[in-house]
Image 1 (cartoon, rainbow, N blue to C red):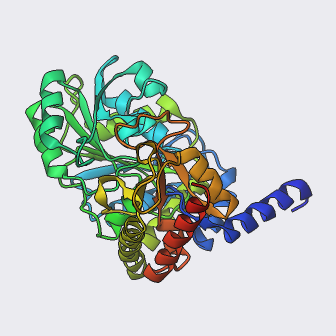
Image 2 (cartoon, rainbow, N blue to C red):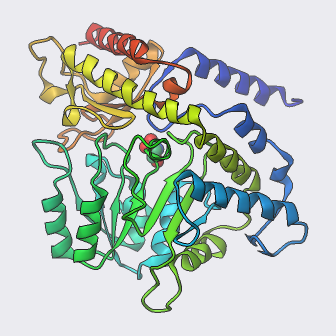
Length: 405
Ligand code: DSN
């Protein structure tokens, strides 16, 4: 690279990534093939429109890449093109969710979604996100005792508020989700059921987390978390749901919302890289990696629990563990607690363990200095870590945090 300043910064970041224990739940390490597709000549092409209907000439090969990516997206999740369509152009998760709402909701319509502090996402209608300015969020949370979803309560809130869309799928909820119950609730109130499976997409592809496709009308996902692809997003929609006013199917409306509604030319290098990652996600080695993720996350949760730390909801069914490091400001019998998530994140970073501070359900502290830290095992699992390594990681976390209590 001629630009030495940028080259040196890239080298420095690569060395940082290699030297730390990475427990950011939304990060991963992609293959060289994914990187090669991202850094390819595909970056040079403009392709506004969709395969077969572009606004520029010269897209014969680009069309084949995008169609292959669509095919692989359906195949990865075992979907028939008779039942599902997929848009692969959205640049990332928040724009993908915004595209769905703008395609399917009336202006000012209601998005019923988990509130941010309980594990929801900004793009699910939070007031600081454009999704909360254009539409109204109807929040639901988790049960205060179990810290798990209470489906009867979700149903009550839906019945009372009659949302246009119900969003299931979260950013800091480590447990299994009963998609069927969500379908029943959505049907009860005639709402669209959207699943945002960004965090768990790789686990669904690897068949270690229940697939939402049997129940959802729309499924969005980023491609760079457990799915281990480039930063991008996919929007799946069922063919047999049509918009009430126009009679068009959801996918037609979503495609129009993505382009020309929200974006110009798609990033074709990114689409090719997604296609590469999706092929990898169909492999046996990916299934093995997914199984290892679950074993590693359970090991991390149980080891930390034995060391005295309170695990939110009591455990995990995914790649993620939420730890209550504050414990209501008290140090417990095993000598841990009383740390806020911000300082815990900083202490750990100083010792080369990268985590993020996170609110816990019913948090009494502010999001900038919350009660919890969120830990994810996908990135270290990609690097080959097994249960024995996660026992060591849990002990290292415990040791660093105890030093600072
Ligand atoms: N930032 C992602 C996460 O960490 O969960 C979601 O957008």
